[in-house]
Length: 160
Image: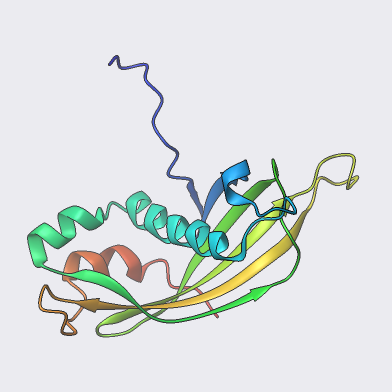
């Protein structure tokens, strides 16, 4: 490998919001060529993970150092419009609440409209999520957010 090797994108922070580009591949779609509903959850998971990575939090290292791991406590999803093969999507992730042992995030997946579809090159909302993840120890019992995680997230809490 050389220094010129490409690495996967972690997206970028714009203000308090993390943006992750995602392309829809054939494997993401159902027989009708529409993104299979469960795959939106995978896109959202990538958005949450890459937001943490962008903030300097690597989940594997955090688990090794503190024993903490995330588990999905509660999730809500609203599907608005279908995404299709080859669509360019953006996963927008924002932290909306920090608890003692949990984090609540809002995520919006948008489809980037082409110049042909929109004179402004705007986006349309495809799906909206609220994810409430809990912090647990290796034993599966709740544990407080480690200080390095809380410190990384505190400056990025947005309004719901």
